[in-house]
Length: 80
Length: 138
Image (cartoon, rainbow over all chains, first blue to last red; front, side, top):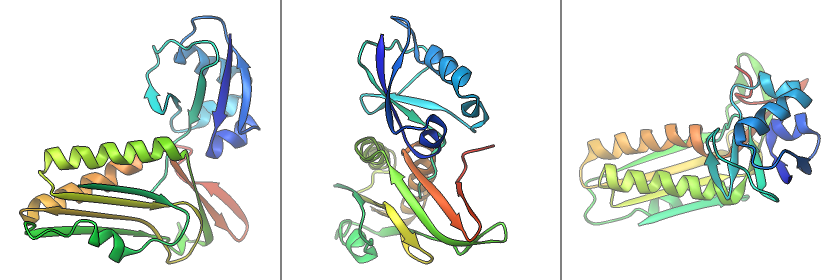
């Protein structure tokens, strides 16, 4: 299945794009996306945290992704 | 009442404070976060704030809702800046009005602490000789 990955902050620097299609097996979870990303971009593994949002909400590791989901990569936040 | 704003223009402390004005308030706590001139001895030239705006707004609103219910706040106002900020400029303003002062202090501290953990906003510190995404690495 195809996802749209959206990246902000240092995640965009690592990913090299602010938005890009990304392929994953059908029915895979946030945890599996994370693993696939780390395999392709090992720098993600060095971040203090790596979270994902779908529909403007944080999603846990066991959240099942769907075709055409817009998934936002959330590196460690530092507002305030 | 809850007032949440994400703005790319200079923040007004007065405006944030006015949002929480209430004759029933015994205390109002105000937090103002500003751009510091150095980090671990390195001189900061400027900061760049970037937000995943719709979710940042939602997460700030959630914080304001929690503050309202947990500390019985009368009003909560959270304003956050985005874009390029110079030294001394205001990055965030939080105002909380409660019937009694102790709750205002606690609620305001909770709001800024939680904002730093959950709101998808990223800060890049630009030095004379490089730049760093704050808190990105352990």
